[in-house]
Image (cartoon, rainbow, N blue to C red; front, side, top):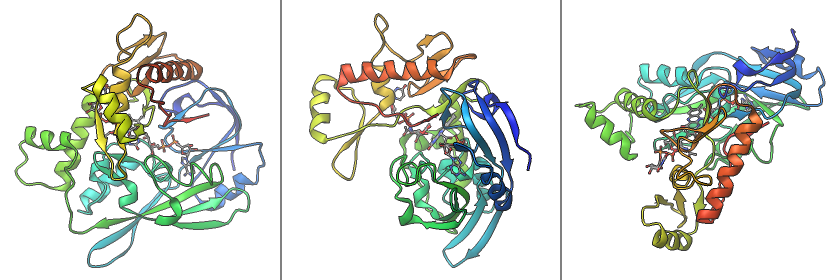
Amino acid sequence: MNILENISLKKYNTFGIEANAAYFSSFKSIDELSELLAFKQPSTLILGGGSNILFTQNFNGLVLKNEMDGIIKIKEDDAYVYVKAGAGVNWHSLVLFCIANNWAGLENLSLIPGNVGASPMQNIGAYGVEIKEVFYELEALHKEDGKTVVFNLNDCAFGYRESVFKRKYKNQFVITSVTYRLNKKPTFNTSYGAIELELERMQVKELSIRAISDAVINIRSSKLPNPAEIGNAGSFFKNPEVPKDQFDNLKKVFPNMVGYALENGNVKLAAGWLIEQSGPQDVVSWKGYRKGDAGCHAKQALVLVNHGNATGTEIYSLSEEIIRSVKEKFGVVLVREVNII
Ligand code: FAD
Ligand code: EPU
């Protein structure tokens, strides 16, 4: 067990924020994890790829980087294969592994940064699919009693960017592996308009999970900033849900407002549009706005960026200003998606 002291977390978060961990270690197995958890600290923080985190201060406890590896097929039946991956496996590597084996279900989720262990945390989603649609079960270790618990689909209470691990069991469990149920016979999901357009542009003759993955990769690369080049954590806010009446009233004043009808009768608004259509005093739009090194991405207003040396507090303050101005203009309150530490 090797516990390091006073370690910079800059390279461990895709925002590239400078913050220190009082103690830092990593684990490759449940035994190593158990040993580390016995090293009692005021708090522990489990870290995957650090792509959905904003550090606004130093972390005064023990940061534990999950490096549990391995992908195995645990069983199969006529329709499905069940694939179990260690929480430390890079998400996109798992997606590519499944595509190479012709196991369908993850292709729409190509190129999402981060690791397997965080995928159930916020029920990651993109381009018409959320992991709850292919999720089978996960194993998690309780930080206090050290017992391993299996969570099935219902136990996880998945919602839009939500799970039981962000609410009732917040900070209580370490997810050690996740098992996905993948289709042997794919049903292609091209419901997200941009995918159809990209497939056409690519002149795809025969639809396949690889073609969908390639299309998603192209779309994502065209508008989302690569964290290796510019610090960010993807969408900073969730897309807000409002009652249909409120949407209809807003539409009368803002005819171009973007919204998608939900099954529950509400409407999901595009937060990127709300942010693009509002701005700080004397500036038309937040999109492309920059204050010091904290900014709002020029191609996707929902993504806040670190142009170099922004502090976590500067990014957070910018997010507060955006929330205030969107609320003033549209009466809609944006909620942060990124985990604030
Ligand atoms: P981290 O940032 O390391 O951790 C996130 C949270 O989960 C933290 O609270 C952490 O403590 C906790 N955690 C991590 N691992 C474990 C574990 N094993 N056990 C218990 N708790 C754990 N997300 C989407 O849903 N859809 C997208 O399309 C999308 N696009 C993105 C694009 C970019 C460019 C970026 C930078 C991010 C994007 N994200 C997206 C957000 C992010 O990639 C996902 O939320 C991802 O699942 C985070 O994984 P991670 O391993 O980096 O988690
Ligand atoms: N829009 C604008 N201006 C912008 C950005 C978006 O007007 O600057 C409008 C456009 O009309 C566009 C609509 O918003 O058609 C939706 O934009 P986009 O397709 O880029 O998706 P999003 O709603 O901004 C969500 C997820 C992403 C996910 C994509 C694709 C959330 C919070 N974000 O973004 O997830 O990749 O859809 O499915 O739900 C993440 O969670 O980090 C993330 C990147």
